[in-house]
Image (cartoon, rainbow, N blue to C red; front, side, top):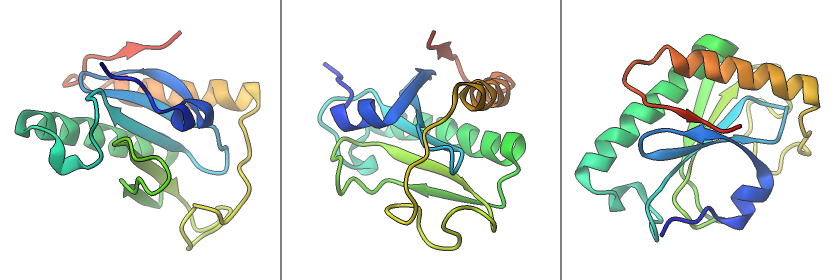
Length: 144
């Protein structure tokens, strides 16, 4: 049975469910930062996903990457599955900008996390919903 890692649950805002992955927003307004977590138990690496799930993950990851480019005008995308702190398979999708809090360095540990204010959160969620809703390949169940 799939259970979201407690660290991911504490650090993120649940946005909804894609066909394979849970869609999470990192609660750090320094960057538009979305995390995909495949709903598969006990996995640590992308290569552990069955072939069909790997293809579905690619569709979902590409959709998130596209929304970060279009809705947030990302100058660069950082997409990574590190898992050094949280071993549960999850993939970060981070929109980066030349003027962001730690450009050009990696985001981890470079700047203190800055939680979203309610108006900021509403705006970023709207952008994410708009960006993913246009992708007809996705069957999205949005969180309340």
